[in-house]
Length: 455
Image (cartoon, rainbow, N blue to C red):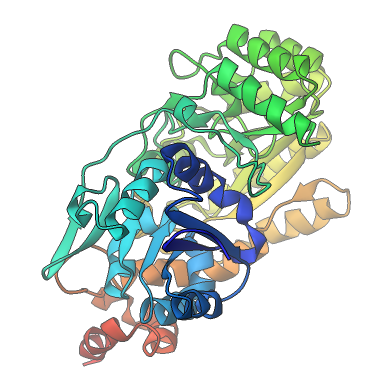
């Protein structure tokens, strides 16, 4: 049983314990962990563990980190746990639709950097500060909601791992993004300003990974080759070389420019590719294209053209990398002509033996495209994907994403803005009826407003 009167019960949904490494690191650095605050991880419904802690005289606070797809899966659980224990939720869904979680009984939603938020939450439950004084959270305030001050952390201030809990996730080297793609949550949420972990801090962390037997070092970055970039579109080749050299110097084998540190076309040039060939372990390079139509790219605010992306992809192949190209089916505004252009690009990618990682558009909460209805994946895309799958060139979860996209759209439509009362969109009644009916019992705060829509 963990030490401390206050115990955080971290719900590691689907085994994702690594997502909580930053919490353990922040609590340890604050001096709270192991003395006044305990931390325990659970892989299933946390009610049993929380109740046991309560029986032993401890105060249990349950933590979740939720993307929108995971929230759909765990909606019933979150509501039931919040009826008995304080629940604090972080992750993309908390930032993009914090008011939904708060209406469902969640105690607080983390809407910015989690490191200083979790320390503040701990001190709040220890009776040392009011909820309004905890940074980077949202909570119920009268009939409405309140978002506290947003305080950005410096990545070097916190280790990206936890020795105590054996958590060694990919090392986060960049937080925030230079770009404003309308389908992506990263630039539109509360912690968008770009920050980097220094080379020294990253190498120090890599040394600890190697000492723990983790020699394969991966990184987390919205744009892997933008590490330490001084301005959008210009890779800092010297910093990338210093990073990779440093990791190798402590016995690590670094992977950069592949999942989860994919890159954009603008950052692919001969100099950076030569550095990757010399010092990185990966033979694949993941490059975001998204669409074969310049019109769709412009509408999505991608800030590059199809031609620029194809030049980067061919350049990567010439330097000996296997290009892995992200394509996003069904972006808003896509028409028949745009579909044909993307299918033709898929053929061209196949000719140069590039792999394609396929996605279906999901209207993620908090993005400009959150209120754009998803369409079924076009038959021409399905035909092309089926044909190329047989050649071993297709990756990605586009079929699963196509299935959940309408539900995530309807999750936003049921409560699109943080108003005093939820205001489901009447125009979405027919489209969302099956989801709203399915959720009416679980989402009890919405039951009356959904009945009003029905009338």
